[in-house]
Structure formats: structure tokens, C-alpha cells
Image (cartoon, rainbow, N blue to C red; front, side, top):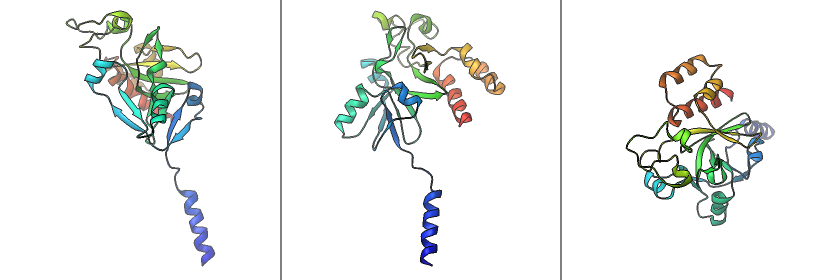
Length: 213
């Protein structure tokens, strides 16, 4: 009887699902190879519109609770994090689009193959002109070339980080349709919505990610 109980316990342990963990990645290579370090605590905080207007940057602040050294690492040196719920965020601090900065803090992301897709503020006049309203007040300087203080600061579009070249490009309609070519119903729905903003584009990226799992 004792041996039988031990056998059942062993079988039960084998059948238990693996426990999800918080994982941090120091660079793009670690993320692509899923070779990160686990941490006990990750706190994801959605930044308010006022915080973004005053200091710029991405939408999420990620910390490690009271661990100050880990918080500094997350803020300045970490490339990406994956929470125990499976949500991926990339640190925008060192990311550039045509030499323009996204600012500090984290943006929600999706990995498809060797590419990382993430949501961030429209940068550059070519992108910004598609979303700015006529009465928006434009900012000065390089970043301000595309941003409007009242209109674009909370608007988001999607970008793609090429895992092979490290180059970041805007994810426009043409490239999005290529991603959806095997899913004609999704492709048509995307076209019907007619928006290149992240609230539309990102949901299809998430659908593609789930379909590949």
C-alpha cells in the first residue's frame, strides 16, 4: 500500500503543469532564444495620460516591488520582460525609429517568429500626419516633428523590430495584410475596420500569436 501511494504521488507530480514564472531578458538575443532570468516579483503599472504628457515614454512602468537594485535594472538595462501570465513587454529606453526616441518605460509586445511587434507613440512626420487632428498643438524639436501635445500623446501605432537586423519599422497596412494572408476572414475584418492604430492592429497580432501556439 505504501509503495502504491508513493507511485501515485510521483505520477501526480509528473502530470502537474509547469508553473509560469516572471522572466526578464537583457537583450534581444536572449528574448529570441527564450534564455532569460526568472524573478519572483514583477509589478506592471499602467501609466496615466498625465504622466505620459509630463514625462513622455511608453505606457507601462514595471518594477520589482521593494527590490531597488532590480528596479534599477528593469528601468535602465533590461530589454524585455514576460510576466507569469504570459504578457510580453519591451523596454523602449534604447529603441529608436529613424533616430527618434520612444522614451523610457515599457510597451506591450508580441513575438512572431524572429520579429517583435510592439505598440508605441507615432514618431516621424510620415506616421504622425495620419493621426494628428487639425486643432492639435504640435511640439517642437525632433520628436515634436511628429507629435501633438493634445492629440498624439495617447495615440498608439504598431512597430516591428526585426530580430535579424535589429531595425525598427512602422507596421503599416501593407505589411499587416501580408501577416494575415493565410487568414482571409481576419484580413477582411482588418480592412473593414480601416484603422492603422494599435487598438485595431495589435489585436490581430495577438490572434496570430495564439494561433501559432
